[in-house]
Image 1 (cartoon, rainbow, N blue to C red):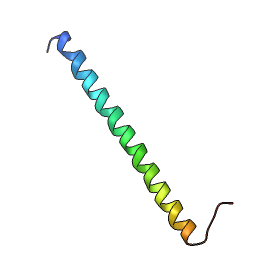
Image 2 (image 1 turned 45 degrees about the vertical axis):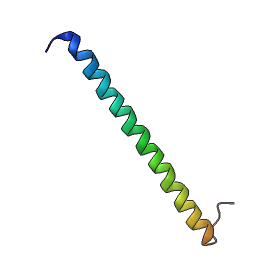
Image 3 (image 1 turned 135 degrees about the vertical axis):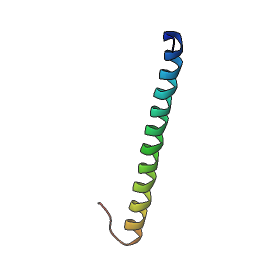
Image 4 (image 1 turned 90 degrees about the vertical axis):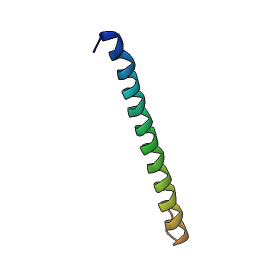
Length: 47
């Protein structure tokens, strides 16, 4: 593999890493909001 070909491959892998990280953070936020809503409906409030 030539060094010129390594850079786009590296950028593509880093792009996927950032995309997967952002998707997992967003999914965790959605789960947290759903759980918060369920607990609020059950009568448990944080304040």
